[in-house]
Amino acid sequence: MEVNAGNIIAGLALILSGYATWKTVKLNNLLVAKERGEALKTKKADLGASFMSIGSSNHRLKIGNKGKATARNVRIEFPEGNDIVIPGEIDTKFPIEALEPFQFVELIAFLSMRTTKRKHPVRLIWSDDFSEENEKIVYLII
Image (cartoon, rainbow, N blue to C red):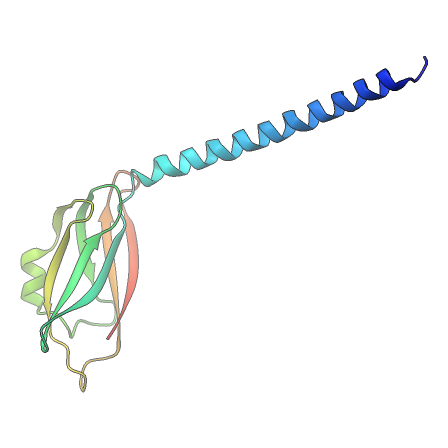
């Protein structure tokens, strides 16, 4: 077999074609993985908590859903004890049957710079289309 310019060009074209095919398959796999991740996000609720000041001495503990799915059977726990929210306030509002995306609930909070701890862990527990038992611990800082 004789090696000439045409054979060299054909060989390089074959190698380049194989490389392009390999890269295309790799990119397609990445796109499929990304689409799966996006599809899962639509099934997940993402709960969070933060303190909110209303005026100089009134505070609220705001529990909200930042996710794309409805959170169901939302519960709240204070692993290190609750000294910031009236227990009756929790008993009347929780468990929340459904917390829609971007919906929130406020609890009256009593904060004192002298007697209240600076960091409060809060455990949020809920169900959504992704899982029946989701949990998130949020650390609230005063």
